[in-house]
Image 1: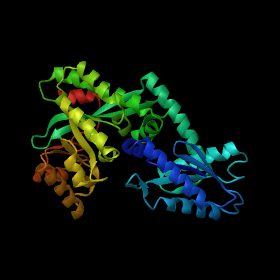
Image 2: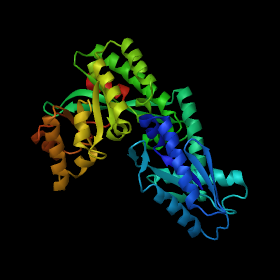
Image 3: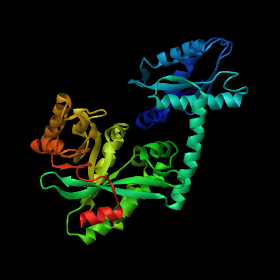
Image 4: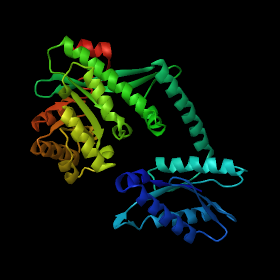
Length: 389
């Protein structure tokens, strides 16, 4: 078995490495207490453990022990007066079908563990040959991503954001696209998760920031309209200490007002480390940058958090627009979010507007801004510029 503690980094970041060490000691002690005498627990490093199970006669035996390990995490760990809830992801590889030597078994159990994380974390998964194929594909895609950065294969497309009252363009959302040399245009949903996992989202995210700001600079000089540029910021970018320095460097080289920038950050990313999030958001807003909470209504959606976070805009997720005309519950939720935002003095940008009926619904509830295929799909730079002019 290969086991990794879910969100252990958040524990270290919030309560300190000493508290993290206490947790690892408690966990190791409990692990050695629940396994059988013939089994072995080893800490590989950080929050990763391997568990060697001998005399296993079936998958059910391994599954039973994995379930017992996961049960450890049902009870909170008491760490310096704090009750901490964590989970674990476990991958299982069986001799001899999944490997006939230790290195292969550990590697395949590690692969299965990552699959457990993809399945929502806090579960166990057995290794399969399909996982192995997917890993090979991911390795190839990671190498292609690195080459793509070097060869400037990425492009930015721009989806207009409209004033719903006047139906005129207020700004654009910058969206990355990849012109893969063999596969053609590749969906971000396929390559962004790999970029995040392998740390490539940092250079890719900085490329998006700089390119989008260059474009905003150019368009701001070409038109007298107060144009906005909305840019998605990943959790990995947001938590890097260098992020603020990068933004300062970009603003120093730009002629547009900082207020013309909107940073979109998902509510899930904001909640990962609330103290750090609030501090960083305050720094960005002090520069003049607007903050939008992306995908609102699909994650935590806590009114308490919404009150604490220094944000300017809520983005109403497209899932509500999809069902708003035929599902009363979706319509009520969308209307309530718009009303809540107004009471908190926040703007709302509705995503996924595709029909005139949806537009009418949003106008009737005084939603100020929106985007979607009813107005325009994401456009390459030249087509977006023609539409703007």
